Image 1 (cartoon, rainbow, N blue to C red):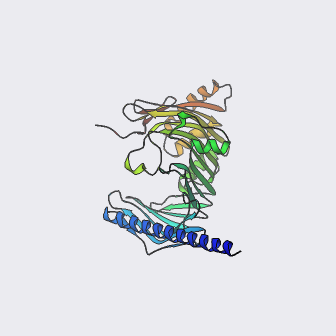
Image 2 (image 1 turned 180 degrees about the vertical axis):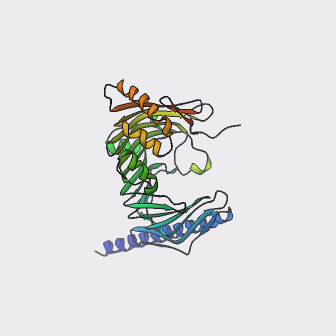
Image 3 (image 1 turned 90 degrees about the vertical axis):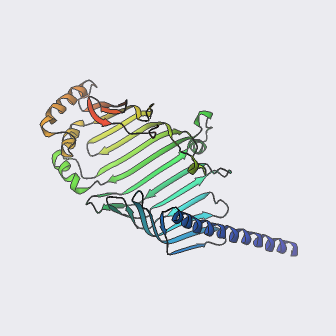
Length: 346
């Protein structure tokens, strides 16, 4: 009995020492981060910093946060942010964000109000700490800009997971070609775009002011893994595959699949196939937002109607988004420059 008691006391002492050493390292690391950011010309302010949670958690709370990059004009303010990790798996971090945050850009300030916004980051417990999964989710939220627009949703969830993690969750083996590959998802329920912008669309189309659902599944392969060395080199996409896109907006439904990759100049190149059900709602919506001039709307509608007849269902329109030589076309309609996937060289 005495030996057992000694073992328990020794174990408790070792665990306590581990917690206090770990909490001290976390506190020092956070303080050093703020100091280093300021030394590099980035405004990094806080009013308080603490680490609690003994004996089973490391709970870091930073209060009165104000971060700003004078060079880019970007900034973030929040009354607090909290980061939690269990002591036996510090490579799995959960962050809780406050119900109100302020994001600054060179042109505006955006106030983000949310319920239950949180994020989690899980690395694999190896020396390089490669990303296993990162997830951000929120209950009802609204974003309001000083420029006058507002966007909100009932709930949203975004994630990026390594292919190894997805394979583990599915109970299958990943393959060698999946190195540096990741799966991305996005789901938004009851997306409410800016009411002022939607007013004319609703009047012209009869579509509801709220988009019922937006969901996306995509995959990508990168030139390097997302791990603790990410700050030392640029990580670029080898390709991006849109495995599925679904938008349900009243009677209008949009689906898409396709794949793009950077061309020799760094522009996105490839093809994405769109399918639009009840596409007739699309033309007046594009007119309402100024994408199509009213005087040519009938011509566009007639052209799209002729294309829809080729599908065998006049209510279903199939259109390819073609990206080639730095330009984009949606079917026969030119859309302008393609996005850059790689920075310009030379």
